[in-house]
Image (cartoon, rainbow, N blue to C red; front, side, top):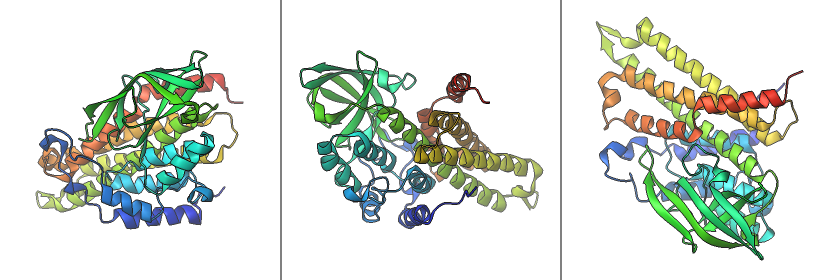
Length: 377
């Protein structure tokens, strides 16, 4: 079995490294130093560079100006993004454009997918539900009213909500189906309220009050939300992996230079063992990430659906990234608590990613249910 990446996937990763090399994570202040958001908007200059490098259209077909690549290629790019804490809606925009291409109306494909791939429009997804713990598709109701759809409900912690031109909102119908509504920013009946993440980024609570949308702005297709949800979760795992790898590298450099009793503390057994444990966490995060990304990309049949592989990846990412940053702060000593030092910002982002992924116990329960429903031979 060949576990290597294709030339196209490797080329996407190399292009991402070239773009993200100039990004300085410590150029943005820690959320502890700002009264509100760390910035008014995302990094527009970096966004333009990503568009020029064709990294916003990885999942789109050539017909829409894309590279026709898969979830693995996107995760390789997101891994590089996570290493520098890139302040761009790369995951949300890419995933939303891909679901519009795969399931949306011809008009939506023409007006949204291609333009999002070129960076002319910004798309995001409301995937956290009302509280961040309940299923996102149950937070909003969608009902037919003639040829239109009417939406009511609340989605919280919508990333880049104030910057996105269109937000993809999952909603449930009276028959229990899940549809995806493409809600333009400022649409009548859609109200945003400002929220902030632990990373200091501005989020939005999206309240829908009898918001009416035409049929062409609603995706009513089996499997659309499940595919989008799994892609978002797997992409978040890729961001966590890149962040964790950068933090462990920072820790290795610091402990190699910091001396106690005339020796670098990296030579002390207690320090080396902790660092080794976190390295094992990262390798487990990586293995489960590629398994989930491969399952999404290939649609390969198996005893378990993609949801099982995604659940395993989420368990390792949520637990692993937390352990990595906690150990890093411990081994950095006083520097780990210094809000002027870049590690503090990495910790804040790690907590945001961990909360976005949800508690490992919930994913373990999901995995248990899947195993019970699909017993292994």
